[in-house]
Image (tube, rainbow, N blue to C red; front, side, top):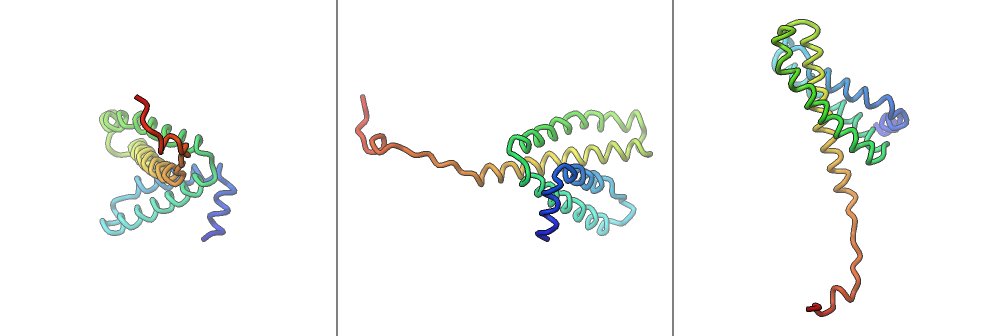
Length: 142
C-alpha cells in the first residue's frame, strides 16, 4: 500500500483528476444494481477518491490545498443552481442529466473531503507561542 501511495505522490498532477473522477463515478453509479450493491460500490469508489486526494494533499503546499478547497466550494455553488433548474430544461433522463449529477457529486464530495483534510492538516501543525517570563510573572501595569 505504501508503494502505491508513493507512486500517487510522485504523480500528483494526475492524482487530482483521478480523485474527482472517483467522486463523480460514485455519484453516478446506477441505482439498478440494488440498494445494497449500490451502497457498497459507491462507498468503495468514494474511499478510493479519498485515498487519492489524501495522497495529493500530502504532496502539495498548504496554499494549493486551501485554493483547492475554496475552488471546490465555489464550483459547488456554481453547479447547485444548474442542478436545480437543469432537470426542467434538459429532462430527468439522458447523458446531460447524468453528467450534471456527476458534476454535482464531484463538487460536493471534493469540497467536503478537501476541507476536512485541510482542517486536519492545520490542526496537526500546532504553533506554540513563546512568552517572555517578565510578562507571565510581572505585576500588572495600571
